[in-house]
Image 1 (cartoon, one colour):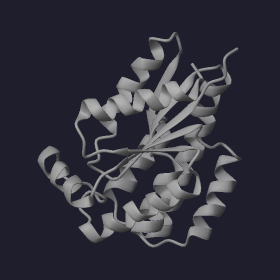
Image 2 (image 1 turned 30 degrees about the vertical axis):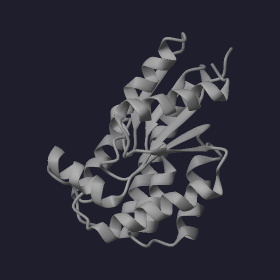
Image 3 (image 1 turned 90 degrees about the horizontal axis):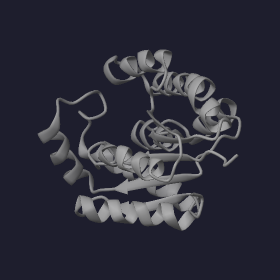
Length: 205
């Protein structure tokens, strides 16, 4: 059986990553693979309930991180691990890099706390490939403002998003074999072509 692959999409709000999720899933399905598309926080009934709290209920950074990792634990147990075990590929909008970026970089939570939660909750499950959509915070803010009403994260200022972006850059630098850095300010077709090239280069499918 061909092993399933775990692909994550990362980037600040407004970077445009979500618009490419289904395109990647379709690319994989055309090659005959089962694909599960999901998101974090979310992906299961419990995790979606926790998502609503995280996005809309006021709380401190540690509480926020604990809820995100609780949602991740349920997501892993009930959806991600079973899908990978049967050979499906999982395409996920955000994963633990987002926790280090938002709760760590953005909120200022100690990276050692996040690292402990990462080890405890994930039990070694890391993405096979992470697509990082890099976009200047000011451009992302303009895109968000034109698209929707903001949640607790999207209402944060540019300084917050600058810290989030810097944390993403640090995660990318620490795991260059896993990350593909994408210039999300380019035309959608150009970004899509780079994604397909990155998938094809892995030689997994």
